[in-house]
Image (tube, rainbow, N blue to C red):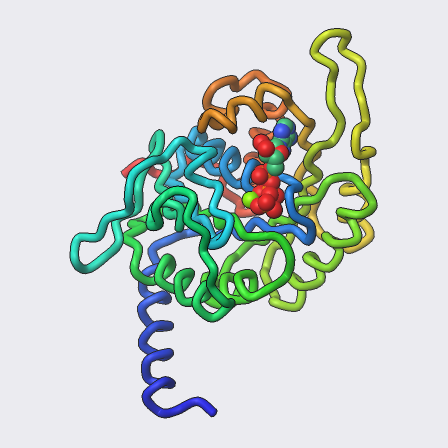
Amino acid sequence: MITEDKKKQLDLENKKITNNIHKIKHRIVVFSGKGGVGKTTVSVNLAYGLHIHGYKTGILDADITGPDIPKMTGIQGELHSDGNKIIAQESHGVKVVSMANILPPDQAVIWRGPLRSKMLNQFLGDVEWGNLDYLVADLPPGTGDEILTMTQNMKPDMAIIVTTPQELSLIDSARAISMAKKMEIPKIALIENMSGLICPKCGHRIELFGIGGGKKQAEEMNISFLGAIPINLEARKLADEGKPVILENEEADISVTIFHIVKEIENMFNENTKASMS
Ligand SMILES: Nc1ncnc2c1ncn2[C@@H]1O[C@H](COP(=O)(O)OP(=O)(O)OP(=O)(O)O)[C@@H](O)[C@H]1O
Ligand SMILES: [Mg+2]
């Protein structure tokens, strides 16, 4: 049973979150049923794609036990607070907050769901995000506690589900789509990642995980399809070096697709003009 004191504390926490995220125009959660399908890759490059298009953007690393955003954006050092609010770190103009910048490197986070959710609430309520156009949250795989907390408390206006074209991933992404529908997220869209690989030597296309399953699933489940991102070896190498491919090589096939996805998102939000840079 929930005590009166606990209820007051929860109300206060919710109010704080509501006031803080009120300044963020669009909130996007990126999740998937299956792990390792490219959520973090999509979150990072999408955030930088939006930034390049002139939007004030932040990334919230909502993967508390496997926080990969700092590794992929090259952010180092510790998160600081000004005594009142947590100050988001910044990498190439995009604000970032991650558990990885709170704990010493290599330290495992062995926390049960409620504690992980508490941390996420702090990321939502206590971080000085400022007036952002877009906040992209990179979630852990599955449909567990973190996804519930983020979809309830961040109040996203868009959910992006990432899948590979492989049957195994599609079965799990169907669950993630159902969850997004149950949580009544206003816009739900699918991205197919790892959608074919062009051999850099001979130009032949290798369909490593198959192709086209994402588009078909989006049609069947009546959600938007944002695009099919190819496997790109340079992107993988750059990610390991903390450099988002979209910043390093705008012409790469993967970057071109992500810019196309950014345009689709702009259209979905009717953002016909570039964001104000004020
Ligand atoms: N389109 C792509 N081309 C090349 N490499 C990719 C692509 N997408 C993802 N990768 C690589 O695949 C690996 C897994 O990707 P990523 O970490 O983004 O997946 P994830 O869904 O966030 O994983 P987790 O479920 O563990 O959080 C990473 O090494 C990443 O660099
Ligand atoms: Mg990840």
